[in-house]
Length: 329
Image 1 (cartoon, helix red, strand yellow):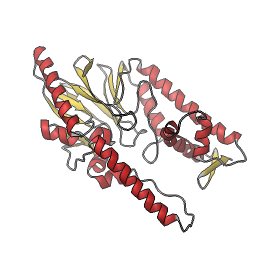
Image 2: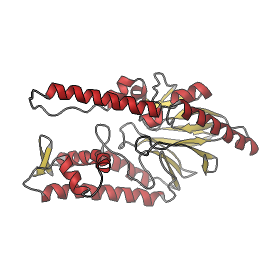
Image 3: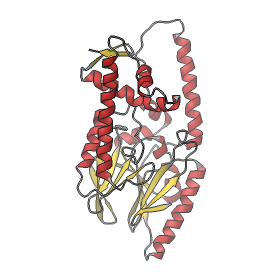
Image 4: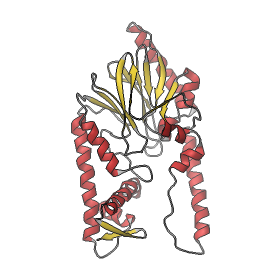
């Protein structure tokens, strides 16, 4: 637990082997009408640790001369490492859960959540092995989902308490905070900002030292860049509090750095396709050229944004697609 801004505490839920279960931040805006931002993991041990630290924070507030009263919890986006703790925290502390209509649908049950990430099979090739491969893929996905569901304590919430628009305002401790849509990492992503304090809760859209995961079907490169540019136009921005990692104390510098990096990587992918002409390149071919000496795990993590970038270039009519391969126009 750490006080990252006067009156704002970060409870870090520790992960396990990095990418298997990343550490995730839950923020508490303390006060007489405070708010929790994001729900984190939902495993019993995660809820228990939150409760212990929450009681410590309440004691700090009493020592400062006031009772910390929090009755609401706001979700940044509908990924399981952020919404799985909502039900457990509501059951234990009575927090009213605040989400958008789109989030409500996704977090309602396993079927809705998983269908929102279902990728379409664009290959129409006929093969005697196709039905068997389809079954094997389905079994693999079930095993994978069961594995991380157990580790992350994935829990759904069918009936959240308050439904809001993605563009609205919310009062916290008699102060106006602005909520605005910031799609890119996921299309239902929202951001919370207070102009007077200069504090922005960025969710997963901006991290301090690593790049945000982007991948189909819910991420969008263009929308992501637009969201970042929108943040650079916020007045008096002093600190960004991300969903993973430590606070960003040079927010404009970091935002412009990420925007420049995304632009560079788009150009890198374009040059690979262009310079490979007339040969057609698959996503794997592009990854091998981008990361010639890196391990398979890093390439797997980058696979999503490469797919999105190729789709973006195709949409802009800069490259063409044939099946699952791309080539220079």
